[in-house]
Image (tube, rainbow, N blue to C red; front, top):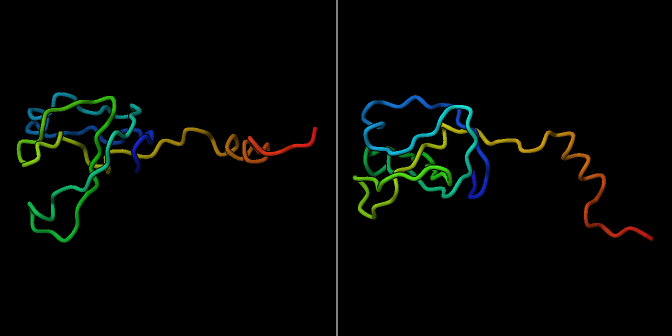
Length: 106
């Protein structure tokens, strides 16, 4: 996932502890825009050998993470979202065939 990409929430199940920390949470089937992408802190916090990818969303603003020294905003695991296919495959193919912006004889 990249900054500016549209995503759809596929998991909006949160524990009461998470609900208490956040001001705004994503809702299943709603569409959001990725504002920022970052690595989670599982490797540091839990001693694991991998980290999740976290997202900040344009449409949702939350307080700083109380466990982050840099006061980074609380974000969401990218696993809660799926990339949104903004154009059906047929429309994408049609655009490629038309050759938008290509030279054409007059």
